[in-house]
Length: 64
Image (cartoon, rainbow, N blue to C red):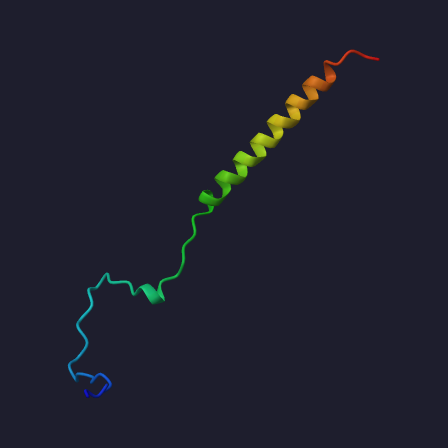
């Protein structure tokens, strides 16, 4: 039966990183604000169009 031994660590130095290398675990998240505002602007535009259409139809009703 073979033994399940832990992996051995090599004593070699870590490879050199490029000057412009960015470690993915140490990057700061940069969120694009306009990407979040575009859907919000579309929703507001649709709501305003609906309100304007409803107002127009209600104002065109004959007076009782």
